[in-house]
Length: 146
Image (cartoon, one colour):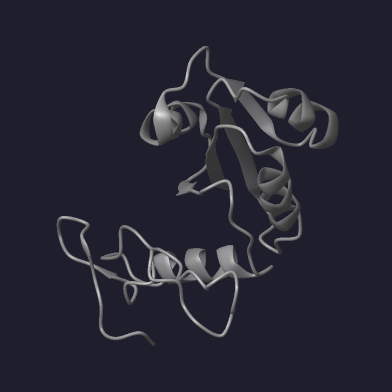
């Protein structure tokens, strides 16, 4: 199982697109956890009403991105943990590729996807598109924009 943790603070429209995109993923065993960081809008109720398969965790105050990730990780049951921004959309088979890669070699302990530019999907977005490599301290580095 892959546990997907999404910290969230307001903006139910972008979150909705993200969750719909995750529903269309081909990976067969996903646990989706949204940590609502005390959103000022009705995001929590929206998730409850429209995405019953999502494990919603409501924080009593805004713990920020890292705090939301930590809360979600504490509740995750999967073998793998995937941290995701709430404003992302995904190709249907993207998680399949990540799991395939991490299971292909026991020396791999973390994987990351490349992020395509939302305005022009022919290009990679700089944030996260580091070339797919991390050093021993988990700092990303590039082998070009491939």
